[in-house]
Structure formats: C-alpha cells, structure tokens
Length: 117
Image 1 (spheres, rainbow, N blue to C red):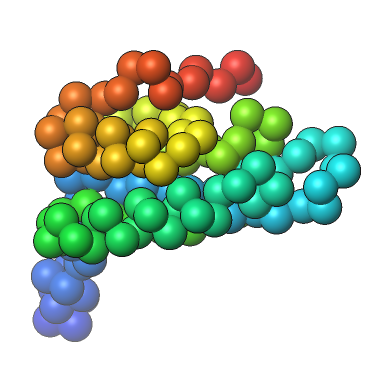
Image 2 (image 1 turned 60 degrees about the horizontal axis):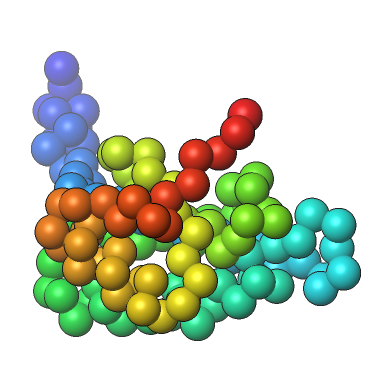
C-alpha cells in the first residue's frame, strides 16, 4: 500500500454506534403517495437533531435523506446498524426513541414498523 493510500485509510470518518436516516421528502398535500414532509416530519426531525446535539454523544449521527419508499406511513426514520424503522408521530415519540433506543440501547417496540417489500 502506498503512503498516500495508507494515509487515506487512517483518515476514515467516525464510525457511529447509531446512524439515523430521516426522510425529508416534501410532496404536494394531495399527492397519491403522500410524503413525510406533508405528514409533519420537519418539527420532529428538528427536535431529534436538538436532542442528539444536547446529548453530547458524538457516536450518534443523524442524516437527512430523500424518500425511503414508505411514504404513506410517514414520517419515517431508520436507525442503523440495526435497520430499525420508526414512524414517530409526536415530539414525545422522538424523546422516547432518543432516550430508550439511541442513548439506552433498547428499541421502542410500539413505534417500529416492518416495511413490506
């Protein structure tokens, strides 16, 4: 391995214990597929971002995503590496996901959906 290649390997991004992807897709309100944005995702994702920042945990990341393909069930988020899909509907749901799953390691069963493929 060349010195440059070795340097690149050593400069990999931080690996996260949890990486949350949140759908920010916004379609018109009457769109037949619906969308997370039209279903009120923005204030939930804002709360999630603030809670994660306040936690001080640098090993948990949140990334905005495009459509995650389960539009009518939205807002949708998925937590990796577990691949757990959530449909939070309220600020309290976000608080519970952060406290129980992201900080405590225990998924919130009542909010989990299993996408049908």
